[in-house]
Length: 95
Image (tube, rainbow, N blue to C red):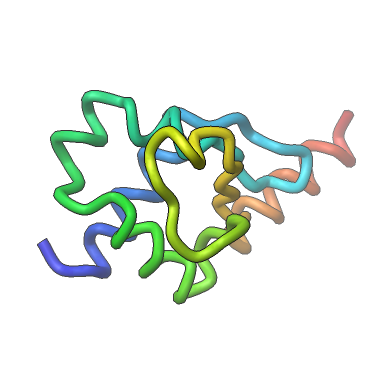
């Protein structure tokens, strides 16, 4: 699996495990991702995939290197894609 594929899988897993925010982004803690069995089976190096996603501005989180235990409560935010933002805005206007 190449880096781009891993980043796409990471986005899917954050959407599965995270909570949808009002702006269309998803929020999950590092501990939830790290301790999830499905993520453990998908990602050989979760921290490396997170760093690649952060470099591509797909996700944001505080710090550079996340360590299990120490950084379990660090929030990882999957930024809203343009299509998600449009759908969220339409849903808010409809309400």
